[in-house]
Length: 260
Image (cartoon, rainbow, N blue to C red; front, side, top):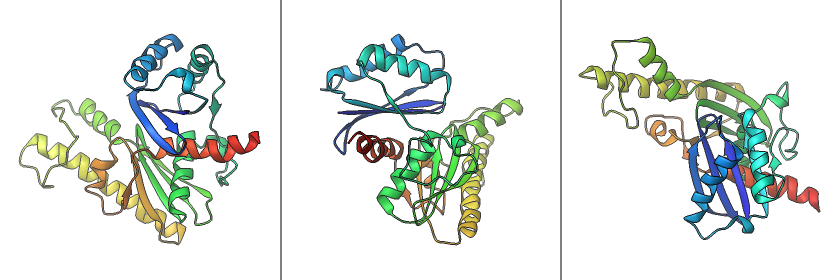
């Protein structure tokens, strides 16, 4: 079985593939100070709730945007799984031309998202990932990574408002209000954050479409993608496991083929 791990700034997503089938997946918080032994305790706990054992893992593929954790996850794989993980970066992915000025600057998760999206839709794309940061990635109809945009994620934006505006209360923003015009402070804040962010997304997508000169398909992934997709006009499809699927495809098309 294939173990795929996407280490993000806020959350780490773990998946187990049997062939092309995602049989289990979990999401845990990313802790920058975690040790390989502590992560092993978490992994053992997660695996204990399934019928999968460490011995069944034949390959490990990891994407990581948190540099201090590269050594930790590498040590975990060697110490507890007896394997060297395969690390995804721009140099290891030869199935998608990356037309960035410096390809090393493109996050592994953005590469995985773009690869998975193009593999499924085979057309020009805008891929939006709602994570700690919100990333917009542009893929051409020929399967080239063209570049994109990065902006603060919705939770970062909300946290900045709560920290800097001392009289405003913290509000729960995991659902959207029915109306834009709020009738109290809490609903006004929620409306401003969610509908304001939806306007940001639609605005960037509109400008990217003009620059691309095509009619790309717009898909979204990430923790809050379902919330924002409900109030956006531009998002067409939701792909909640897009990054994990990208890691699987990269293994199948890059690493496995290179071993033959």
